[in-house]
Amino acid sequence: MAYPRETRDKLRKAYVFDGLSLELAAIKTGVGCATAQRWKMAARDQGDDWDRVRAARTLAGNGMDELGRGMITALLLQFQTTMQQLQDDDIGDTPMPPDARVKMLVSLTDALNKTVASSKRLLPETNQLAVALEVIQLLTQFISERFPQHLAAFADILEPFGHEIEEKYSG
Image 1 (cartoon, helix red, strand yellow):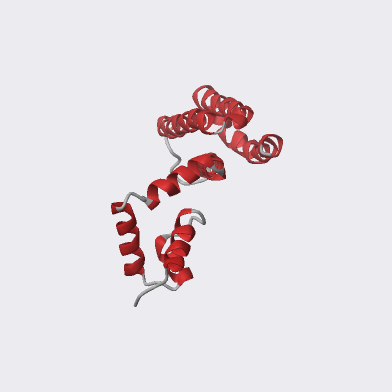
Image 2 (cartoon, rainbow, N blue to C red):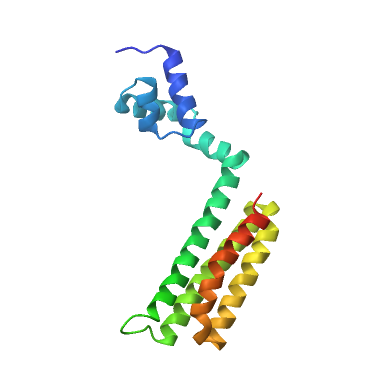
């Protein structure tokens, strides 16, 4: 079946600029997935790499902001979940040994450090949030190393305080 040029342009726009997967873009434009893939490869062979244009658009637009914020949010959720697991472990029959708890927190702290460093480059406007997260991370490490008996209480405080930090530093 021959399609008009407008259909190919609509497919490209849905994929590149609307951010749809190629499969969803194909469905949206009424084109088969195999045809969409063929058009995308043919365009690339002619110098129009849809993936490169899509990546450049993400970097230039709000996509990078959303990516950075999503990265920070995901890590904070992981941090909170780990803290809750550490707290819940105090209740169980066989509590986690202190050295394993510290290793878990140090690993998470390392991930937080790397995420904060990346976010400073990706989202300079979130530098205040990055500093706040770093302070929380340092406090967590301090408590886990010097006052592990207080981790459960800290976890209780951290969740509502996390909401305060989010309200204060998220636009």
